[in-house]
Image 1 (cartoon, rainbow, N blue to C red):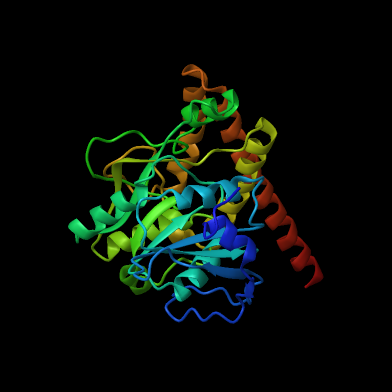
Image 2 (cartoon, one colour; image 1 turned 90 degrees about the vertical axis):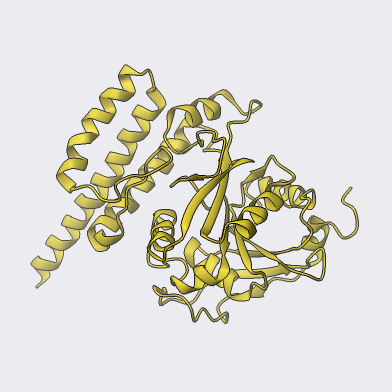
Length: 326
């Protein structure tokens, strides 16, 4: 039974409001359609709000994981945060921007609705880093492989780059600070134009790039542990990669300036590679996956490529139809 005043108990009593009327004046790349989402602001645990926790979700359930997340939030040692839930927006960037527009905290902290917080001091540790290092604009944690997760999930997180975070012993500049547990300076978030609402995927690399261009560090923080798990079945995992491949092809065609590299390691990396280079490295990656005995990663790359190709074929077909009608 939840204690009176717990976040989940407050969530059950709260009323959803329409997000379509929420203004987002700071957004640089705003989506023209009205948001279909609903939102609710859960009461803070103290009068002083330092951190605004933003949780975009499609159904405020996610097979029970959203409920678990709310209960984990109650265990956080940091008391000074509010929670804003944005439900039903298919564009994650627009959902986060809507939440940020209503936020009262100096710092924004994004969570996915299926994030699992393994560290009760995660928020406090991230806030301490932000307060003590003014050059840091964005800080994430370490995505950890849970020992009690199903074998397929653990194996996928081991094989697939960026599905888990290499451990660090000190604050490390990294491209692996990601939305499932990410604290940002709200003033910088608004200054760089917030999330890019035009992108169906690739929000993380875009936002990290904008923070760096503004002169701020993007880091991961040691001993801040969370888990963000891939789909639990091979079919769902491959479907996800197929969809990501289609979305990547869309971005490459319509917004090539925002097609940014996503390395699987900490430290410096090249943000751009020529298309020819990316095509040539694909067979090399497939071969590497086979040689290193990573069959799940091999299949995921194939699904991604098939999704990419499917989008291109469909685009060419639509273009041909338009030419014939003209």
